[in-house]
Image 1 (cartoon, helix red, strand yellow):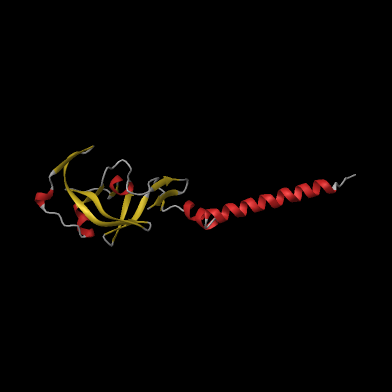
Image 2: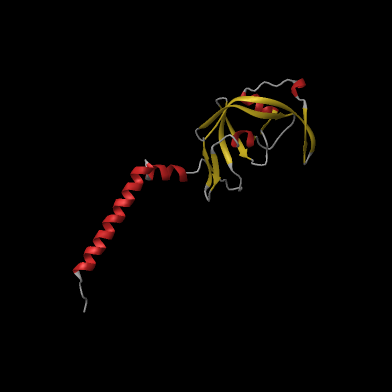
Length: 161
């Protein structure tokens, strides 16, 4: 036999009402609530089948697919990438020598007028143009380090300007 106690029902109803009121107050204080939470969980850069994070970037308004590389100090482009992006480099601009796994390579320091990834646009981004071929341009820390945050999740990277 089931016994119904009216006092227990009143206490349960009061606790339930208080829970909903607290949840509503927290959503009101937090602003957009669900929309804000949803935006924070949508990755800006998804992980590709090869396991790498590839960013669809805009270098001074020109599209370029870049490999996200937190180990690269600077955004790095090949001469061909720089030409496609409209970044001018002359032979005597190659004043630095980089020591890579493939050996030393000359590089030219440049400043990209703008670099945008997933809606986060930064101006005056330091970069290097290497005098040689690269498998892909690198989105390095000269861009990533200027973001307010970036984090890796199970589905990709989330960038915050």
